[in-house]
Amino acid sequence: MAEGGTPKSAYELAMERLQKKDADAGIERQPVSEEQKSVIAEIRNFYQAKIAELEVLHQGAMQTTMDSEARAARDAEYHRDRERLTSERDRKIEKARS
Image (cartoon, rainbow, N blue to C red):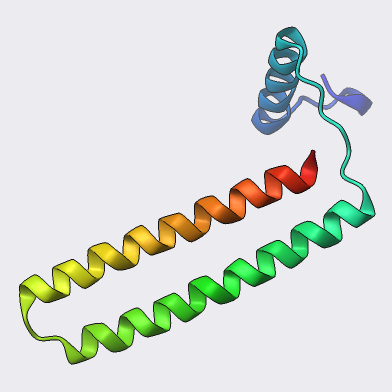
Protein backbone atom coordinates (compact mmCIF):
# COMPACT_ATOMS: atom_id res chain seq x y z
CA MET A 1 0.00 0.00 0.00
CA ALA A 2 1.17 3.50 -0.81
CA GLU A 3 1.04 6.44 1.57
CA GLY A 4 -2.50 7.18 2.67
CA GLY A 5 -3.56 3.53 2.48
CA THR A 6 -4.21 3.53 -1.28
CA PRO A 7 -2.87 0.68 -3.40
CA LYS A 8 0.25 1.32 -5.49
CA SER A 9 -0.05 1.54 -9.23
CA ALA A 10 1.68 -0.93 -11.52
CA TYR A 11 4.09 1.87 -12.48
CA GLU A 12 5.07 2.48 -8.83
CA LEU A 13 5.58 -1.24 -8.23
CA ALA A 14 7.72 -1.57 -11.36
CA MET A 15 9.84 1.44 -10.38
CA GLU A 16 10.41 -0.02 -6.91
CA ARG A 17 11.52 -3.33 -8.43
CA LEU A 18 13.91 -1.56 -10.81
CA GLN A 19 15.36 0.56 -8.01
CA LYS A 20 15.87 -2.54 -5.87
CA LYS A 21 17.48 -4.35 -8.81
CA ASP A 22 19.85 -1.40 -9.38
CA ALA A 23 20.70 -1.25 -5.67
CA ASP A 24 21.44 -4.99 -5.63
CA ALA A 25 23.71 -4.54 -8.68
CA GLY A 26 25.53 -1.65 -6.99
CA ILE A 27 24.29 0.99 -9.41
CA GLU A 28 23.87 4.40 -7.84
CA ARG A 29 21.64 6.99 -9.43
CA GLN A 30 22.89 10.53 -8.87
CA PRO A 31 20.61 13.53 -9.39
CA VAL A 32 21.37 15.69 -12.42
CA SER A 33 22.64 19.20 -11.64
CA GLU A 34 21.19 22.35 -13.21
CA GLU A 35 24.34 22.75 -15.33
CA GLN A 36 24.02 19.17 -16.58
CA LYS A 37 20.35 19.76 -17.37
CA SER A 38 21.19 22.79 -19.51
CA VAL A 39 23.95 20.89 -21.34
CA ILE A 40 21.60 17.96 -21.96
CA ALA A 41 18.87 20.32 -23.23
CA GLU A 42 21.38 21.93 -25.60
CA ILE A 43 22.45 18.52 -26.90
CA ARG A 44 18.81 17.46 -27.41
CA ASN A 45 17.98 20.70 -29.27
CA PHE A 46 21.02 20.37 -31.53
CA TYR A 47 20.25 16.79 -32.50
CA GLN A 48 16.53 17.47 -32.88
CA ALA A 49 17.43 20.15 -35.43
CA LYS A 50 19.88 17.85 -37.24
CA ILE A 51 17.30 15.06 -37.43
CA ALA A 52 14.64 17.50 -38.69
CA GLU A 53 17.07 18.74 -41.35
CA LEU A 54 17.85 15.18 -42.36
CA GLU A 55 14.15 14.36 -42.63
CA VAL A 56 13.41 17.39 -44.82
CA LEU A 57 16.30 16.53 -47.14
CA HIS A 58 15.15 12.90 -47.27
CA GLN A 59 11.57 13.85 -48.14
CA GLY A 60 12.80 16.15 -50.91
CA ALA A 61 15.04 13.42 -52.31
CA MET A 62 12.21 10.89 -52.20
CA GLN A 63 9.90 13.23 -54.13
CA THR A 64 12.42 13.65 -56.94
CA THR A 65 13.44 9.99 -57.21
CA MET A 66 11.21 7.65 -59.16
CA ASP A 67 13.49 4.62 -59.48
CA SER A 68 12.53 2.06 -56.82
CA GLU A 69 16.11 0.87 -56.27
CA ALA A 70 17.37 4.42 -55.80
CA ARG A 71 14.48 5.16 -53.45
CA ALA A 72 15.30 2.07 -51.39
CA ALA A 73 18.98 3.07 -51.25
CA ARG A 74 18.12 6.62 -50.15
CA ASP A 75 15.67 5.31 -47.59
CA ALA A 76 18.30 2.96 -46.14
CA GLU A 77 20.82 5.82 -46.04
CA TYR A 78 18.28 8.02 -44.24
CA HIS A 79 17.65 5.35 -41.60
CA ARG A 80 21.41 4.79 -41.11
CA ASP A 81 22.03 8.53 -40.70
CA ARG A 82 19.11 8.92 -38.32
CA GLU A 83 20.34 5.99 -36.21
CA ARG A 84 23.86 7.48 -36.18
CA LEU A 85 22.57 10.86 -35.00
CA THR A 86 20.42 9.23 -32.34
CA SER A 87 23.38 7.17 -31.08
CA GLU A 88 25.63 10.24 -31.00
CA ARG A 89 22.97 12.18 -29.08
CA ASP A 90 22.49 9.41 -26.52
CA ARG A 91 26.25 8.97 -26.06
CA LYS A 92 26.76 12.71 -25.49
CA ILE A 93 23.85 12.88 -23.04
CA GLU A 94 25.27 9.95 -21.07
CA LYS A 95 28.68 11.65 -21.02
CA ALA A 96 27.08 14.88 -19.76
CA ARG A 97 25.37 12.97 -16.95
CA SER A 98 28.60 11.48 -15.64
